[in-house]
Length: 101
Image (cartoon, rainbow, N blue to C red; front, top):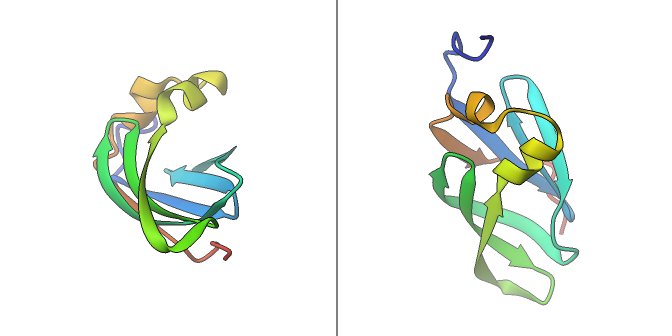
């Protein structure tokens, strides 16, 4: 399979307003998050498709809020096999280059 030969095992999580992007191996999955999302500040935990993140929301821009993202149902809705796509990913980092406040 195409992912087996990957050297890079790091995925990138970012947001542009309420739209969240998850990028890995040249593929980007974009989906809508909460309307009040300002930015994803940090990935606290990665567990094979399940993310625990610290995020900033417009209701309280001075406070980090723990939130959760489950990629498995999103991938399944896109007809992407989660086991194959997620298996080589060992870490996820935040890229706030596109984040808007």
